[in-house]
Amino acid sequence: MKACGKRNPLLLSGEFFWIDRIRNTIGGNPEGGIGIGDDAAVIPEGLLWTTDAMVEGVHFLSSWPMDGVGYKSLASSASDIVAMGGKPLYALLTVGLPLSFSDVMYEAFLAGFERAMGDFGIVLMGGDTVRSGTLFFSLTVLGKPFEKPVLRSGAQVGDNIYVTGMLGESALGLEVLLGKEIHGEKKEEWVRRHLYPPCRVSLMQTLVSSYTLTAAIDCSDGFVADLDHIADESGVGYEVHIERMPVPERERGNSPFELPWSYALGGGEDYEIIFTSPEEISPVVAGVAVTCVGKIVESERQLFWYGERVERESIRRGYTHF
Ligand code: ADP
Ligand code: MG
Image (cartoon, rainbow, N blue to C red; front, side):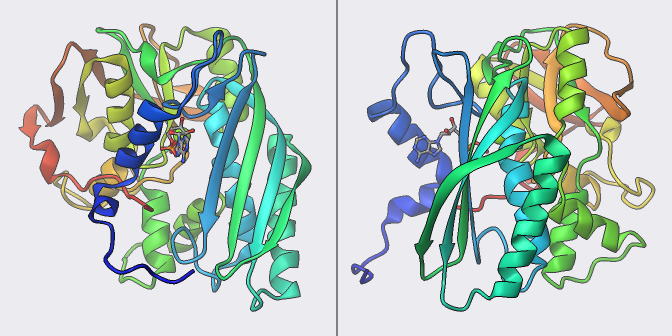
């Protein structure tokens, strides 16, 4: 396709502008189901359904270990089912292959993909293979709620805000992969976190069977951007105490604008779960840390650093692939 003259200025409006446009025009909400606006759709038959694409040059580089690209493509898509309080079950995989894609790369991709299938209990049921100028992988995952779906829209004033595991390591790993100067002893671990993200299936199963979760989202855009999605959909505000956030090497940074705090707040692709609950949740669930970082309030969205208010706009915002 030939580039057609001027770049559409609306492209600069970002991913969410385009999603809202589709949602408000051609998007559907069948009776008994939930369409656009959450991590996955809820279809009237009671199942959860999501799709995600990973594009070379946007989400990964072909020089990266393809095993990791394979693992991450499935883990990150399945994570949207988990964020709805569900178990990912079946996947469809579409691959777009440029002529430069080698057999060795394909083998590595499939090995990583297969490992993720085993780790999360997902079966590959089909897909499509096309020739493409750009290498891409598109995943559709079907799953089933463990109990009932946990939506982004259910957060209530007074609920606690929790985050699972640790935030910021994936963004640090991305910087290492991109060749940026990042200091720290755990560089390889961070790269692993980026390429082999978690998908919190058993943690979510334990959480929904033991506690009331009012809202949930997986952390893909960055903590603040993802919590904003919960606030938008629930019509509420929040107070978050940054110093409580679970970050790596916490002794290193001494302001919310420095590493690792800035990456925990804005980095993204951690695929941890941010959720709200009126209950006190155990600090470790299914072997994973669960940290209370704040509260849902009526309308204002406020971040605090040891009691002092931090300007939201000055925090590094969520990573956008768009
Ligand atoms: P996530 O980061 O959890 O994968 P997204 O930000 O990609 O979520 O998507 C948010 C919502 O918008 C989801 O309900 C998704 O299905 C919907 N969505 C995104 N792009 C499109 C599209 N092109 N057409 C229809 N729905 C879309
Ligand atoms: Mg999501």
